[in-house]
Image (cartoon, rainbow, N blue to C red; front, side):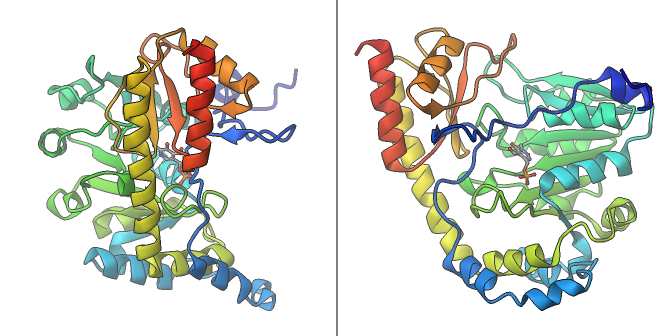
Length: 350
Ligand SMILES: Cc1ncc(COP(=O)(O)O)c(C=O)c1O
């Protein structure tokens, strides 16, 4: 075994992304991708892109993209930071706000990348447990005390529920470090926390183009934060962290938010219908505000997930004391969800 890597790196397991199978065609409901294509404006931007432009480096400040995003949010561009997906923004956050040997806090269960980022930074991770219904506990801020960064996904992943706005206000008011609100799934939800960034000096909101904009393969995320925080994060990011092509396509996507909203509305309608169908089959279905459903099958969850895989359908199973009785099912097209329900009925013998 080589011993060249840092001790921390050798001792840790890396983050394992959801499966992207190459061996056969599955109905892919395992990584919260969007089943519908991005807006026609995106395809036009790609087709119209002049390859000769790639000779030069991209704009390190992604000015056009930040201008547009800022205008849409009623902010100025110094409130925006672009990332190579929101994972890049999360890495920048940890490197900016958490010292080596320091502490990062995250709600639990939540996005499993969060504690991995702490380890990469040589920092500690404090898990703030959600309550029995996967809600934010009233004492979340004090449980996270001592950490300099608290990561909260809202809507949460993998549970899909959201936290009441007043509990988020309490958290932001009482936590002394940065509260990073990861809004990867916000376009499928009823409300959002973007206004918080103007109300609190310690709040950052991040969003992604991977879900509602159908652009997981592009890699683009946006963080909204007070300029004093953005200017510190700019020091940490790679100079050219968002490619020229990504900036051009992202601009087109952001210019056509109507297409995104129509796409998200379609997914929400499917989600609500399938939630009812699964409940009728005996599943315990958590109320979802995301593009996936977290639910407890009437049989062992890992057995159910394995059964679906044999039927050619991939969903996600997270072993562990809090999540092991549940599965997470991404919302696909209506046809894909009909296949899921048919396979589920076969597996349950209904
Ligand atoms: C809560 C949460 N945040 C961030 C991400 C990553 O998003 P991106 O594709 O923008 O890196 C995901 C992806 O599944 C997620 O579930």
